[in-house]
Image (tube, rainbow over all chains, first blue to last red; front, side, top):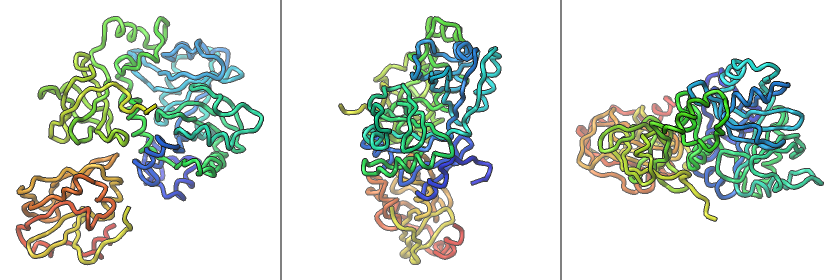
Length: 366
Length: 127
């Protein structure tokens, strides 16, 4: 492992827990502690705690903040009340996804963008390039740590380390955020996540991350386990959540990526003309969920075939721990992008039968 | 998962395979180090019984949740059996890399080729 990789404030905790570390987006991150499957199942059944401090936090302030975000984001920030959040995109002029992010409207006219670790510099340059008068973009990534607590027992556990005399964690609605002192650490507590489970993402000062981590893990009686990026990836794949740089990038639009529901058209923003046209005239390719019928695992880069002809490429895939099937996503022509369509995936030279399925791959039994 | 070990009665190949040889009959598998590096094995794609495999070439693949890895043949020979239990329950490769998690049985082209392999000490010196 080279020393040029960056480490989060929780690096020592990961070492103590015996984590297997890998490079991700320029960071040295835990891929798993005990095993990906075990951590995955813990999150689905109980809870997992993830260090996601590598992710970026950009604050947008100033008299021009709203105008910058109206121009830069594909979602309509004027729909947000204070304390609410949206999943959104920064697009280029061609409608391609520069980054996907969550935008928060915080008190005191502060807007927060939580962005992908590997894209912080790109996003900053992109926002500055829009030259919005009166808008100030500040990179808070280095001074901010972020811990995700995800799984059905999340709110019960959080209640044990929640400040008395404030409404309980169960009063925070999905895609909203509040400031609270959690386990003695001042945090922005957001009901967001990347796993499909009930969960929160906690942002706190970098130098307090260890206290927050320890404060949560002091309540292991709830069944919470440290979980790595490996489980984070299999969990998000089961939900069909895209990963930037793989399933979406600067050459694919949210419409092509079947994420149109997060885009608010009828407004002018960077890339909106292309998206308007795609909605009116249709797209040439769509991102779909593909489940293998044979026992094999689709992986990024594997060709998608229909009757021997290549019609697309897998953008990410794995063995789903929950449904015990090879699952993946990829772009194919709309004529094939219909659930139930049978096709094949070329798995290292062997054609494997597969079918287009609706996302998510995994649905919780209710 | 199994404890780290490199049994002295086995011979080893630098690509992290082991061989248990008895005359020209041999069993192949991967070492503790290899299964640890791979993580939880979720899929074993074996060669066909009856096929011939070449030394230092891939004869199958093992997949973990995160990655695919070719399995390199330590010696040349003809596949006489595949461990169906490892195909059905690939986690055996993690739980018992030197016993229940063996991969294939081979009739070696040359019984003396075993002598070209590393002993446990020489293999561990590479790790």
